Structures are given as structure tokens and as C-alpha cells.
Length: 303
Ligand code: UTP
Image 1 (tube, rainbow, N blue to C red):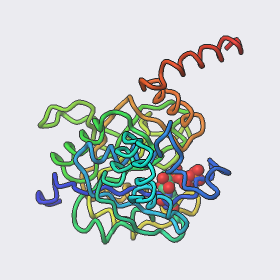
Image 2: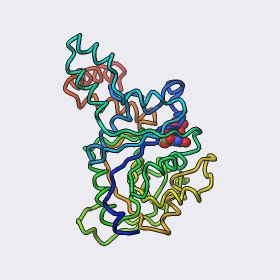
Image 3: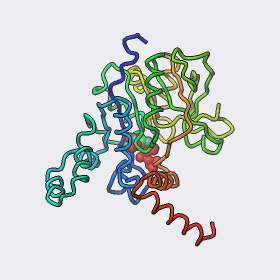
Image 4: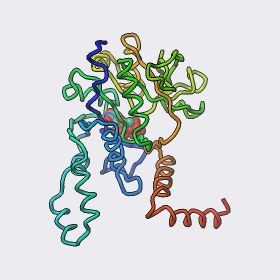
């Protein structure tokens, strides 16, 4: 890995071409990435996180029926005129901010052949630079602290950087799992950085090499595209990003950054509901009212 390839992450890729089967029928005619958490689509939180970490060039991988994602981030003159006429200036500012949020690009994945395949669609746009991959159903509500730490780790060590979350044995079989080794220390003195020696996709609890799940933030070197070319369909007949990262481990440094707070799996129904409740409780306009509603529900049901 050449030094020139370190510390130069300017692009993020958001794969959003999956079928979202866990959220059917809501996802029959709309992408899961547009399901709102309170009043904002999950993909918008993720684009805002990229921007907060200093990445403004964002490529979204969309499926054949996913025009709605482009529409969400485009300006809508008629809606803006309507809001202006009604004097709803706060909403007008909010709607305009969405279309000015980042420099968004789109590429199609015509068939949902897996997360790895979706990432390979980004090859031309990304070029010969390291880049971030951010899953739009993984919400990180942490002021981009995790992503910023991952970018700093990539700048120091090069190669790839994974986000690692401590999980229970039951949880781990829903994720990729990392075999890790402690490292002496990083130049920056950052805690929670480990060397990754192996990754296994969705292991049985007894086969898991650690309690560290790989979650949906990655910083990857351009070499991952060649690794994806060499990756054959794995679990579920899909090209798995985890398998390509497994190949990278023999070729370049792969580090993991651990974290513990701020993450919601918005692709899972229970965690989707938790995200809605927690984020609404955090808001001045909704928090106090929702707290009362929750208390009365708990009391009435004797929970
Ligand atoms: P998931 O496995 O969580 O998404 O992929 P899914 O397949 O849409 O959801 P379920 O399991 O059927 O409910 C993680 C991310 O990768 C994208 C998805 O859109 C999601 O944001 N993805 C997945 C693609 O872009 N293409 C694929 O072929 C597969």
C-alpha cells in the first residue's frame, strides 16, 4: 500500500439496492432506506454523518426501482414555492438543505446480487483512492465520531478499517465477526484500535472467533475491487463484502475500531422502533410529549 493512498478519503459509497425483505410490505414499492426515523429517511442521517466527517462526495448504489432516493435529494421547485406561499419558512429551509447537503451521485445495481456486488458497482466513480462504505440501514447517532476515528486510523495505517461492536453470542450470528489482535498503540494514541486477522460471515455462536461484530461502516482501499472480482458467491448466493475483506487481509493491513454507543440497526424491526423512540425523546418538540405517552402506555399495560 503506497503512502499516497493513505489519508485521502474524499468519497463515500452508500449501497441502497437491496430488497429490504424484512420490512415487507412497507418496502414493496419504496426503498427501505427511505423509511423515516421520526421524520427523516434513514439514508439522510447517513449522508449527514458522511458530511459531518468531512466527506461530501457520496455515491448511492440504487436498484432499478429506486428513483425515489434520487427524488428525495433533488430540489423540488413546486414544493418550495408552495411552502414559500404558505409562509412555512422553517420547512422551506429544511427542504432546501436536503438538496444542498452533499455532492450526490448515483449508479445502478440491476440485480441484488449482494452487498459486495453493490460495492463493486462503485469502481469507476471511486477510482484509485480509499473510500468509505456506509450502510443506510445502520444508523450511527454519534456526531460522526466513529467514522472520524476510522478515517484517522486509515490515514495512519493505510489498508482497510472496519467498525467493530461488542455483541452477545446470539447477536453475532446475524453479522460478520472479526478475529482480532491487540496492537501496541497507535501514533495518535487512539484507544480501541485492533489488527484484524480474519473475518467470518454470520458464524454460529460456537464458531465465532470473538464477540466483535462487523457493522455497517468500512473504510476500504481501491484494491477491494480486485478482491471483489475474485470473490465467488457465498452465503445466500450473494457476493459478500466480508469475503472480499477476507482476501484483503492477506494483502494489506486491516484494522478494526471498536465503539459502543449510538448505533441502531434500522433494518431490524425492533431496533427500528427503538431508534424512533430514542431520537424522538431527544427532541425538544417531541421528547416531553412522547415521554408522557410512553409512561401512560407502560402504566396501562402494567409493563
Ligand atoms: P441488507 O441485507 O441489510 O439489506 O443489506 P436487504 O437485503 O435489502 O434487506 P433484507 O435482509 O432483505 O431485509 C445491507 C445494505 O446493502 C444494500 C441494502 O440496500 C442495505 O442498505 N444491498 C444489499 C445492496 O445495495 N445490494 C444488494 O444486492 C444487497
